[in-house]
Image (cartoon, rainbow, N blue to C red; front, side, top):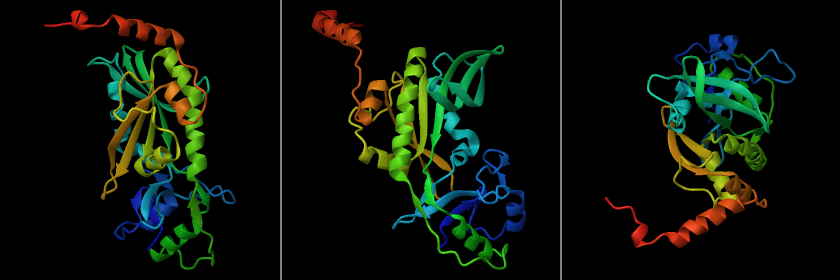
Amino acid sequence: MFKIVELFGNNALNREINWDEIVKNQWCPYSNKLCYKVRKSQPEISIGTCIVNYGVKNQPIIICPNRLLQNRKVFLDCIHLLQLHQPGNDIHVVSELSVPGGSIDYVIASVKDGKVIDFTGIEFQTLDTTGTVWPERQKLLKNHGVLTEILDDNRTFGMNWKMTAKTILIQLHHKISTFEYLQKHLVLIIQDYFFDYMKKEFDFSSINDQALVGDSLQFHSYSLSENGSLKLKERLSTNSIGIAECLGLNAEKNVDLIIMLEAIQKKISEKTLLKI
C-alpha cells in the first residue's frame, strides 16, 4: 500500500488523470497557488503531499494546512460567530494578519459599505512530520509512470504529535488574551485524529464539550469522508483560563467576575425567577 493518499489535491490512486501534467504544474487546488511545500535541497520542486496514511490502522492524516481550505467550508462554519453580522453584509476572508502575540492564519469579517462590522480569527493546524515523505512520493510517481527509475531510498517519515500539539496550544494561549480584550472569537481548525490526541495528552477538563458562543476560543474538529471531503465532526470551546489550565499553567482568574457571580447567586430565588 502506498503511504501517499493525496498528491497536489488528487487521489493518489487515480490512474485516470494526467500525473505528468500535475507534477509539472505543481498546483495546489485548495490555495489556487503553487504548492508552497518545497524540497530544501531543490526549492524549485514542490513536494505536493496533502494526506498520508499513517500508523497501524493506516489513518489518513492531513499534513498540509492548505488542505483545510477545501470548498472554504471551514469559513462557512464560523459565520455564526460573527455576532454583529447582518443579512446584506459582505463576508471577506483575509489571510496572514499580524496581531499582538503573533499572527493569525485567517480572519473572516462581516463588512458593510466597505467598513468592517465584526470579525473572527481562524487558525489552521495540521500535523508536522518527522523524517521525509519524499521516497514515498517518488514510489507513487514511478507506479504512475511519471518516473522511470528512482533512487534506492529507505528513509521513512513519522508524526510529531506531541511537539505540534504543545506548540499550537501555547500559541493559542498567547493570542486569546487579545481576542478576549476585543470581545471577539478565535477558532482552531484541526483534523479529528490530531484533536483526539490532544484531548488525551492534555487536560481538557475545563474545555466545554458543547461549544458555547460566549467562549472566546472555539475548537472545530473535522473528519475526512470516504470521498475526501471535509466534514465538521465536533465543536468545543473555552476561554483564556481554560486554555491555561489545559497546559497546566497557573491561570489568573477574574476575581471581580467571581465576586459578581457569587453576589448574584446569593440573591436568586423562586421570587426572582422571570415568569411569563
